[in-house]
Length: 330
Image (cartoon, rainbow, N blue to C red):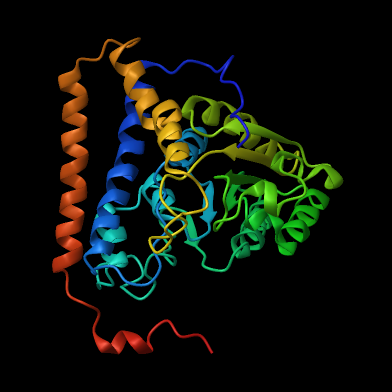
């Protein structure tokens, strides 16, 4: 497994910035842990892909974005929804198939959407969101609204043909799109070294003239710094930009994946040495001199929010059968 890029020359966060990043990443972590518990209890059915370990990517990018920028991603999407400001109760209720969910209980884990929060969905077809995210960029340029499409994909999706068609179109028309490749090393369960001829995903746009860079996706500061530069490039009319976020997921590809393709020691080492939340916690206690009681208060508040969302998601009624006939396009 390749080493993460060095974190040297990464701009420091202020106390408030680190507190914000800590709270937002912790919300995703605790939410996903609770979702895993509910799945194990049989309260969440179908597929469920958890984001545990990758929290710094979406939070760092969101810290660099502006109101009006859009987010679109694949099926490992709960963290992106929360980062966009979607209500935890609505997200969790969708996981349990209740009418209070964002898709009224009909979309489940992989298919949620919020026009209000500019979240254009988690998508179950591998790589499908890249074409759609490029279309969002086209719409932004057509309208001249200054918005940027933040289009996420995994390392496995980066090998899809439609991704390269999208790259070509985006660069040809100088569309305001930032392609964020979340390289968690294993796609569905195969190491990138066995599945990809070019394992430096930041170079995937070279033949189209798209600039790219590798980023330590476990360090929220490095993510925000790189995302700020990439988003400015796209917003200024210079065309698309590729960010390869070198990150790591602690759980399997989905809840049904035993993840036997890697060792427990490898996962434990990543948790111990590179955990994105623990990095921030150490800075808060050390450099920022934040009292431990204040950090514990943040933890308690986050747990309360997540517990409330779980209570709602297990008590809210299921959709009326009449919902079977709504939102059908012929």
